[in-house]
Image (cartoon, rainbow, N blue to C red; front, top):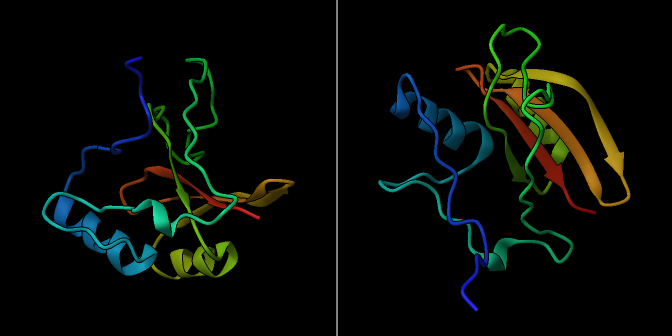
Length: 125
C-alpha cells in the first residue's frame, strides 16, 4: 500500500536565511549544510517520535504573544536537555514564551527565534 512513512523535512522562509541558519547552528546545535540539517533515526531516543497534527485555523497555539499576526506553522524539535537549552536560547536573543510544562510523555518549552518564529521544544522522558 502506498503511504507516508515519516516527515521528510520542514521548510520555511527567512528574511536572512544565512543569519538565521547560523543562529540555529550556534544556539540549538543544529548542523545546517547546503541542503539543510539531517536528523538520522539513530539519534532519536527510545521514547522519541515524530508527530504530525492538524490544528483548527483559529488556534492560537502557534502564536507569539508579542506579534500581531498569526503564524501558519509550528516546528517542534526533540531535544536532549530542555532547561539548559532554554537558558542558552534566552542568552542568545531568543524570546522564551510561557512556562515549560511537563507531561507523562515529556517536557515542553517554547521560544521565538530572532525573526519571531515560535518554536516548540520537546524532551522525551
